[in-house]
Length: 152
Image (cartoon, rainbow, N blue to C red; front, side):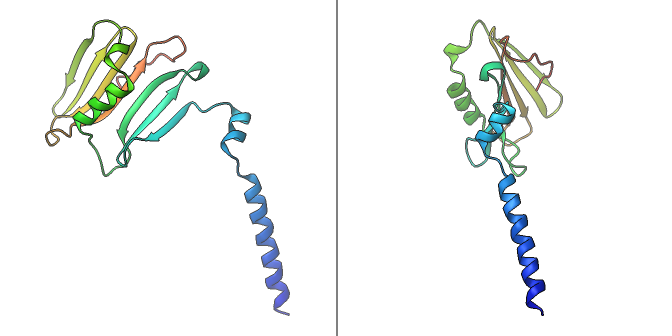
């Protein structure tokens, strides 16, 4: 008498699990249905992520380097410089850099504007020495990329 209700519960649970498993999609199915992703995120280190934003035809339009977790709020300036030179070597930056620094107390924004790309670093000048960058954005100036009016 008690076996039948337990059996029915088991059948219902198994039925639900099969339907749930069938509803899951993989990357190829999502891409086929919705097109390629506009954003991708990479783990540079356990503490740092790199988010890539694409424009038309999967052209890289923006790279965002930032801490991966709330427990890490700043990144070493040396590491940010190293990543910048890996992601965008000096030879790929066209024209003369037009540099601007905006600062209000501890927060600061350092912008380098080239003919083809803009680099912006958000910094905390009150952070311990060497750990002052809170994020870095590299934005390409290409027709395939959306125009942005944000400082970061």
